Length: 199
Image (cartoon, rainbow, N blue to C red; front, side):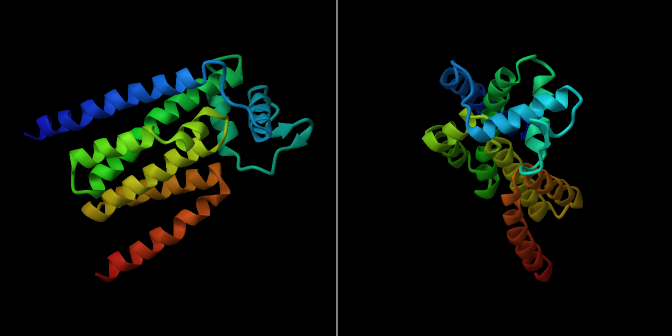
């Protein structure tokens, strides 16, 4: 019985994952979007791959958090063109994020499959969400780590298993290392933890 329920969830997730990647690759057919910030990220990633560390134009790259250039460098290790590998990276992140978004809704609505599918449609129909996944911006991995943190924290609240809390904390840390605005994730978690412990 449980296996059949799992298949009902897994199949829509796989389908929407593939559709999301296809949409993103179609939108970025001429390459991933480049912004002045993108040149900083990509340039730093290239220097990391060359073994020069977090440097850009001969200066240490300290203005932005370090994780996104590292992720770009990892993706660039599979392709000599970091900008081209960034296109595939963001297509993958778009697919991962739509699944995380839908599954988070599924868990939050007490395993409501219809709500999950509607969540998929809302995510895929958002022009703003597609835009940030089509540029070499740090928002895409930040969203992934934030959604993952929320999902894991929800599992901790429902199961009281500490492993989920630890993994959620790691995800929040990764979100913060991607964008400094990740600090905003801490207060809600602390408040919910306080209320949860008091019950």
